[in-house]
Structure formats: C-alpha cells, structure tokens
Length: 206
Image 1: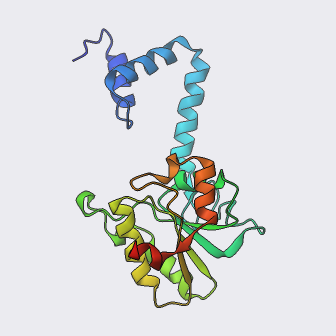
Image 2: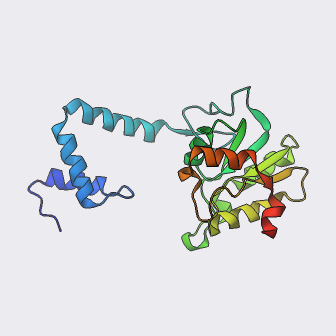
Image 3: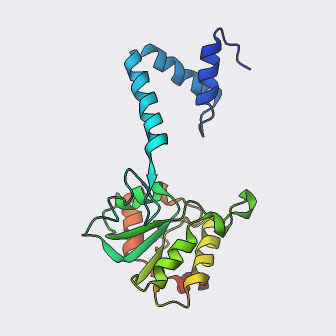
C-alpha cells in the first residue's frame, strides 16, 4: 500500500492505474512525469482524451472507430466493396492496413463470443454483417479473428449464419499461430496469411 503525501497525487495515480496493464507503481511514475512537464502538455493530453471520448463515432457501415459517420476506408472509392474482412476491433484493422495487402472493406464485430465473459452473438455486430450479405453485394467474407477458442467459436457461429447464402467464405491462412492475436502478428506474416487465405470449410477439417 502506498502512502501519499498529497490527496491530489493519490487521486491522479488511482485514475491512471485503472488503465489495463498499468499498476500503481507505473501510474505513479507516469503522473510524476507529467508533473515535471510544462502545464500545457498535461492540458493538451486531457483535452485530447476528452475530445476523443466525447466526439468519437462508429462508422455506420463497418462499425470501425471513426471521426465521421462513414469512415475513410468505407468511403474510399478505390476499395473493393465486394470483399469484407471480419475482425474483432480497430487494432486488427490497423494491423491489416499496415500490411498494404488488403484492398477490400472491413466489418468490426466489437469483440468475440465469450460465454465466460458474458459476451453472446447479440452483443456483437453479427446481425448487420448477415444483412450486408443478404443484400447480394458481397462476394467474399474473410474471417480474420485470432485463432483462440473464442475466435474459432465466433468464426463458426458466423459461418453457420452465412453458409446457405451466395457468398464465398474464407479464412486467413494459418501463418498466424494458434492462440495468437492478430494485432501482434508481424506485417509480413499477416500479409501473407491474407493473400494465401483458404476456404473456411477446409479449416474445419483441420
């Protein structure tokens, strides 16, 4: 237990330590670092976080985090709207975009099915994905969730919703090791896994 000489310092440390992966000692180090900086820097940080929280939007088409109603990827006429890559969240979009190997659009689920954490299909954006496919404008769905139990469960659930519709269902090649999160894969491996994607049915047999 830390003994603080200042209630203001204690409150600041307590708030920063709420962030994932930040313990009390790390929070204290960060807060003391801010204290050494010009006041303006702390103001800029607080303003940026407040603006982000108040003004951030969700793309009405792909559900990605965006500054505007239709994100820059969805509104880009050079992207192929007939190919949709299904990912968990914005971190996966950023990772795949960094490979420069994918020219289609995305669909961000907002998580993975995880009964242990109380996350079911209705908590994700699966229904709107199915609606997109039913309109007949999508030719291929690429499953790009991490190869964890939750990722595989989510992939299979979506597959069952789409298997009778007129759409090609594929998954990224297993260059990504089992248990790996997409966002941590190196760009070359991730890029190759997208290019060398395989029919989803074949992944079920493996």
